[in-house]
Image 1: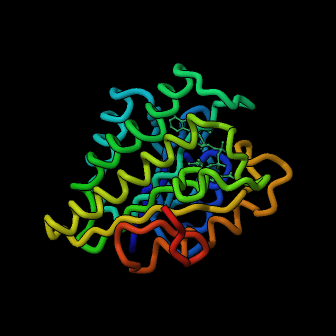
Image 2 (image 1 turned 180 degrees about the vertical axis):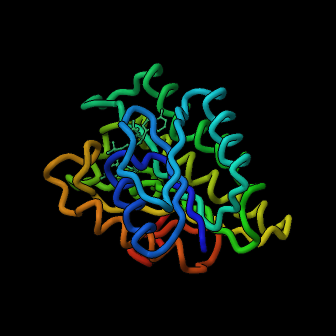
Length: 227
Ligand SMILES: NC(=O)c1ccc[n+]([C@@H]2O[C@H](COP(=O)([O-])OP(=O)(O)OC[C@H]3O[C@@H](n4cnc5c(N)ncnc54)[C@H](OP(=O)(O)O)[C@@H]3O)[C@@H](O)[C@H]2O)c1
């Protein structure tokens, strides 16, 4: 039986991802921060994780390791967008965003890598907002001046995916790494006007996660997306 570790399964895309992987027969190890416990399932284990806390990251990874789990898939889904409507960079918000979306996510990943199987797949949920190639496109959906801290964090997360992919290949671990844009999704983060449901986004991410694509690439709906 295959195992997927998914961060942030209490709501939004992460919740839909956990449900999708369970429905497809996976064992799921999920994490929650402020959300209550997700619905119980005999193939679901839930751990507390605050990606802004090094201690919480260590404890969560240690608890997963001590369960003897071998992960086939890691989905780094948990993330924050705290810029609000700001168009100017607020350093405190940048610091807090990087701590969760980049530093904490990378620290957690590094502790999970040794628990992964040889054909493992690490999938980082990034965003179109992190695409440097599209940063100056003046379309409503790209909101070029908005949420700068979030955009910087997702660009950095993309580089983490790429550098980790190169390292995993160099070390011949067999582990591949992908970055994926989930679309504009109807969640607490995406808002009510978003056209994509969490279930639709989860189906696309699941298809990517269980496939064996070229490592170190940025994906959206099965196609490469510009970095
Ligand atoms: N929605 C969109 O349109 C969209 C577009 C592009 C990319 N994304 C990305 O997709 C991912 C999921 O987004 P979403 O829309 O589902 O967001 P969401 O509904 O706001 O959910 C955020 C998730 O992140 C977790 N989280 C927040 N702070 C955390 C922390 N300090 N430590 C650990 N977990 C933490 C939350 O856990 P708790 O509930 O337990 O606190 C929750 O599960 C994010 O990485 C986001 O950047 C979303």
